[in-house]
Image: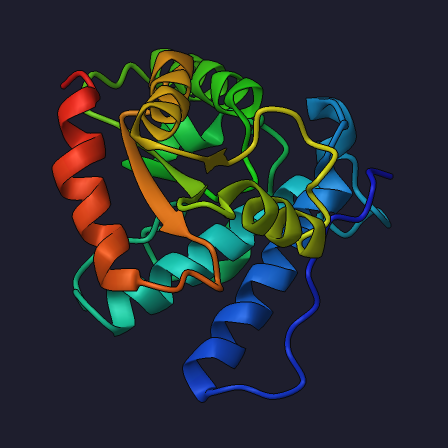
Length: 225
């Protein structure tokens, strides 16, 4: 099994913070269980004749999240991904699925701030394979978050947050320093295949409004469109 880089949910916090932290934790748990496995291993049933498999769980969770965020909160008529009859059990059958499902079934992909350029490159490859397999030519946005720290203590703050998240050993992760350093970090992600890079300030960012101005007025002009 892969190294455990998960961050446990907080013991105290607002309702929104707590719910988001638990969602991120369980997403990370499933991703950790799947990391490093082949398509065949991901499809392997845990206890036949049950159809339960790791890839089936990934499909099921994607279906459930889409149902809540799209069908319940936004558009009640939004279709489900794998079922035309609102059957959540359909997603569990991953017998013909691969890791390229994101490209085949999704309209876009979001990668969290723990994704380095190599991870973005692998994700883009899988997405493109899935889209080619499904014959899709419509746009598929690959959005990547980039943990960013600025100011005189930027490197220390970035390292501290990456350490807290269990990601300090991952190379080429995050951006710290002046405008040029941050713009170069953004460019590395776009060259790896990201369509959109969202700069995410560290949790201890002392001037959130100043950070937004820094991104919009100083970093953005240095990044090719």
